[in-house]
Length: 227
Image (cartoon, rainbow, N blue to C red; front, side, top):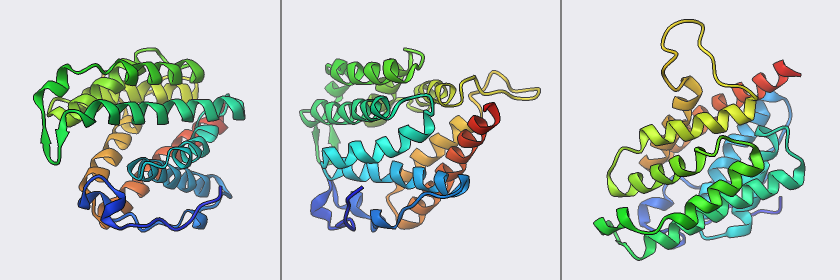
């Protein structure tokens, strides 16, 4: 991946706070053993979000591809890239929907009733490529919408992410005994990563990377156990 150290000036982002904690050099990332690969995937996930904030479409696709080609080991490289492109398309479609309803920190309540179908369509494409439960698309769309409008985004996020995890490891998450009606620790790790990302400080950013490293390490371990 050809990349350069990220410019963290506020002008590169939607708001000044979006730029905080993003001083990351993509060239410093590498792949080796499973733990290092998990760290690489975590950092590429972070870069995907950063490139989205910077409106660098192809760079975002490349970052998400570096994640998808490892977390969905059953996909060909071409399929993994198309899955990453579908996710990136969904982010860009989300921005298009929000643009007409957000002015700075003010969110027009009508955003809740806006046409989010382009977002869901892109996510449906991703679900089809990966082989995820189709519910992934509407639940992710619901989570993204509620995240902006103030509704419950935790529940749809966990529903959607449980489908992504199932596709990544090839089977539903399991618990040895009680609490089986919950969404599982991997799903909540992902949600924790999102919450830390929302804080936009360097400390929280590093914590998010650590949480997501554990998340991907367990996915990779589950894949290895099935081989």
